[in-house]
Length: 277
Image (cartoon, helix red, strand yellow):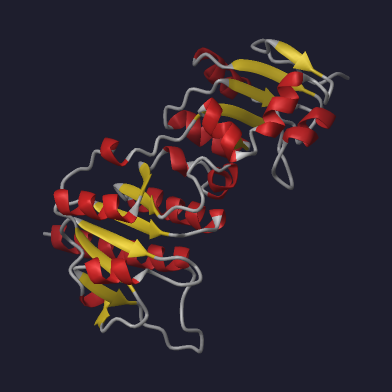
């Protein structure tokens, strides 16, 4: 019995040599993505969240031969936003997929907007600064925490990985589209923090102040550093306060995404506490 075909499908692709397939493979490279001003979203959950965040896909590829990848409402929603809907074979999807266990969904979407000057924050915002964080998995995990905690923005400085990296999108489960993000140099980010009167709280295992003793209820930016070196001396010197997370084992540091999550939720705890009548 043939696989179900979406009435919204514009065409089928059955050959891995198709030019559109070759272009999808090329989009794994950052330079190609930057030139085209697009990025890739693979995975049903990631695509569903991206659509919920208002993303308008350019093209949506799906393969019903993989894991029953067929969802008429999602296909219709993408088509209504102007996406070309393309049904591909399992062989074709296996060539374009970048996940180890693809589920048959892949979309080309506009690049992730990461302009620092474009950020719009509410009253007493909570912001996360990621200085030199290299691993897409850590950036994605920080974004998932930021989405859950209602963080106003996540800013990458001295960035090594771009926000449009497909692996960041995958690790974030698509929350890179629901959380405002930006990327800029340390100098520009520091100037931005000063301009917006946002207190910088720097995480450091050598700090004297405990995280729970710092006031995180006003406009606050929590800064975390690279996996190998932590925050640079410039950022530690710029900080209004340096804080440490209590540790009682032999390891001298926590995973950067874990540290960001602990600090964000301490801020949320404090903010909820002062709102309690």
